[in-house]
Image (tube, rainbow, N blue to C red; front, side):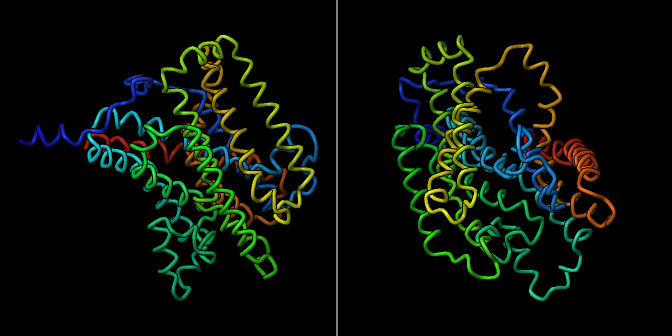
Length: 386
């Protein structure tokens, strides 16, 4: 009886033109290089911002780090790609109820422990005065359930960078609900739907949220960066994942793999266009069409960059990028620890920005490596075993 019930609720098989068990064997090592780049971009960006580093280069390749916060946009595209591949693989192997449990358990084991640990360290050692603020239990609660990004006064209160983790967790919850539909949905429908949702949300926020208060542009940033406003970036990763697992795209993927320079060139052209548009409209938050549409161009750039990483997988490339791939492995720790390091070092009043940067990088990488090997990885193994 139990066996018949289990068979009745198994996930629907992939359509005939999609790639069955192929999703289970797909590995893309250079994705970790992108994770490392995105995390380090955010770290350097925050050093520039917190130390008011006015002399940091304003031209050349280093100019990127002045807008390194866009590394979060790359993270969202990567997340859409990797989580979709993971969801499809689990749906192939398990009935939907088992998929829900295994997917949720894996995501919780990966995200929650370090999120809680860094939040606790922030409260105890960085801003312990928050513990004595009346009503502090309320923002702590919203952080514990990953809803703090929706509340203006809570966003940024405890380890400010973790607002994006709230958005990520909400995306995971959405994936639990729509993964079977995404499996069968047309990519064009996903793309159009995501752009319509994202543009409508960001347009509404631009028109409804005031930037005239003492908060400045912060409320507009907060509300446009919610999950509906990031739909196009997550969707870019989802669409790429569907393209890769769909068997009917195999001939095209083979041609692109044999001419591996094509996609990186397209990515470079898209990034050049995006940066030109951005710097010509650097009063970003005052420009309606920049707020509404620019993230979609960033999503396209991110998708092309991630696709380039999927295609460039020669043995030499994989070996040469080993140090960066390790940094990608610990990138979640880099992201969550670095603000605690910056705020700690800022107490050393004589430390200038150029002097602080190497120390921030060194201490952040040390904390991230320690938390990965001594805390995150053991917990993940225990959850996996269970």
